[in-house]
Image (tube, helix red, strand yellow):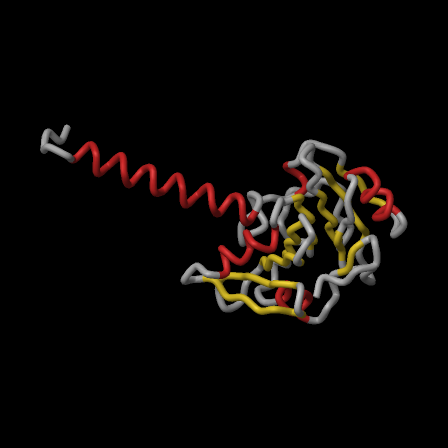
Amino acid sequence: MNDRPGSNRIIATIVIALVAAAAVAILAARGSDDNGSDSTATLGADVRVVPEGGIADLAQQVGHPVFWAGPREGAELEVATKPDGSSYVRYLTDGAKAGDPRPNFFTVATYPVPDAYARLEEVAAKPNSRSKKLDKDTLLVYTGSEPTSVYLAQKGVDLQIEVYDPTPGASLKAARAGEIISTDGAAAG
């Protein structure tokens, strides 16, 4: 035990700073990280494979537009939701079944986030973040030179979009190419 005066105050200050930094990261990224650990298999909610039309049904279920990348050859669409209205569209390949716990699949998540654009701007201002405006209203943010996850937000829309691909750089390529679309017909960038 350290009996030096002020050492407990220093430790408490460090702990508070770490907790505050973690809270900002959670608000910005909605609990997802850059390795796909927030897989739909851990949601414990409604996880199922649906036909292409099931994405519109998912949007009705969660009460807001859902972003996805359209149909992809050789992939089945797995959808999942969380009670907070978050939705996930995973592209299962190679015979994978709904709820597969592996983070091996291209995924587009839609998170309800108040002031999503402003919150993503805060993340973009951090030293290790990179950002790009895809158009006048859409911001893309990521960390690392070849990210597995990128985050998007549009001005005036209280939704944050995460695009995940286990292949480094593929999520960034998909987002920049304008592949991410919503059920209401809007493109994310």
